[in-house]
Length: 428
Image (cartoon, rainbow, N blue to C red; front, side, top):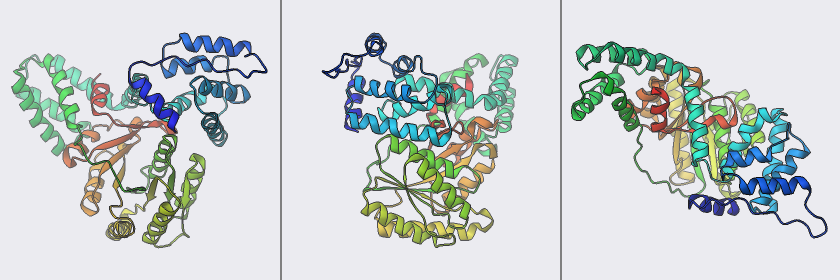
């Protein structure tokens, strides 16, 4: 969407202007509500949430009034009519598919869609929303870690061996695990020595700094020979299907043409579920019959992606751990076939793990890393667990970046992972 890219440049320059007044048709003067809304938008702080608040004022549910207001917003921003209509029509189709009616049900999703479409997800407005969501999602984990650390700091005036022993126990209880806890303890001891801190009350800031440092990701080459191919891996039950749908949803809103391929051919239900999600998010879909060779699915899906001009291919794979040897050989075969068909593919192998499984997430990461390699991790169900310490464990032990975290069931609840925000949200 060319308009959205140019708008991002304007916002990014620091000169975020209020929306331009929409031109009224020569045959008719603007209605009173249009004049009032134009004035409100012009005088408003140039933040997406503020603009949306004005646009939704007096709107209680989905329907003609919502459509009219959203189209007016795009017109006020100077967007081409075709792009505005496309955005609104797709949003209405999604509302119908999800059965949402009231503004309370869909407002957050609408802002999320607008932020992605306008390329404003990194703006202060959206960062604040994400931090709040992350803080809420970490509530159970924070209960497990932060309150105990508060007790530790209150009960110890100095950082001595007793302090370190109690801290290690807290970390292990929060599913950081023995090996990762030991490594984190070594890092923290070195940081405390370097900073010359001896009083326990100065420790919290150093812990937050160390956690943020753990999640720093190295630079990597982002360019790929299009289409980009992402192989989704992980055991059954971790939320892989919905994660694929959410990633496709994000990419679609960012203007990419997405194809989802059903490579888990051993479960007919998996194929059906993925097709439903593909239709729901407006992505292309490719599948063969249940029981087909997964490598053949990958090969033919790759052919479809190339010939039909897709930007992104998301390939689902099976996750049957009870036949893990065969599964890993199957994944290796898929990688070979993809690379032969499209050199360099898959460009990313993304492992989906369930945060609620705690230490099992570590064994799954080890299994897939050794077999086919893992480029990044999506951690689901972080909002429903007290075992969020596994985020630290996985990163420390395997140095694999966490790209997204799942903070709920809605499309908007899969969000980019930010280590600094995680550390801040976890420690308060």
